[in-house]
Image (cartoon, rainbow, N blue to C red; front, side):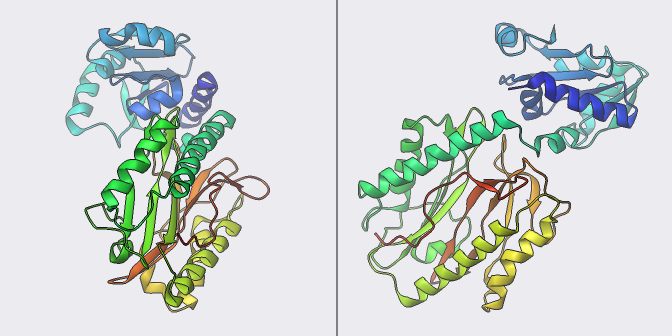
Length: 355
């Protein structure tokens, strides 16, 4: 991945804001800019290009391998050690640094003016490069294959518990090459499927119930996110109707994705389909979110969101209808916004599957 190119993009932000350097302490942002995956690291990006990467003695060998192109400073108190080398106007990540941490940085910087850069690196991360999109594709492919294999092998059947299915799905993704699961896998059957973020428990799968699966894999640090809802045994008319409604809503949301489109407009395109059918109150969350090194990152796609989509943004589209005491449906894909149609990364069919 082009970590040096990413640092140059951040350097351009420094120039725009009149900063002499920025201290990056959020570990995922450090990884984004350097490739470093250890648990203690910080990066000083300087306007003059003389960047410094800091870590402690546990990671000197790892830093030499993962960050060979940035001068290394070894100190357990990584952030303050880097701050001591700064002069002029120093940017810092105010959403990460604590009050006590800011006090320590101010003392260490000794006269440098500290200026919040807010989420400058996260803003850069919102637009994925080709290497990031490839990692997302591979993460999504693992999740697609894991679900397909469980379905073919009969693992999604009455009598098994939500917890058993969730653990087997996780194990299958790991066996297929995932570094980890993206988040705690959601397996929700029957009335539990009406709970958007139900945690799997000992509830048994039963014939005639919805089964909602929300899960993902990580590859090279990048997360996939997908939800599919199926029916066990036989689908009742009300289940078919609710599923078709969510399917239409999800298609409308996907179709609305485009460069320059307001995130609120994408949410509305999907939400209006459900509201028109009289189920507006049963769609209780935002339509989607960015996905990458974090499972939830910019941009947020909701009625309360802000901003427009850009080419290269990886986002989810995940409308749902949840009928308390009965069941619910969510259909979710991970996609990448392009100048043409969005690229669909989660390829599992969205036709109603009855097992």
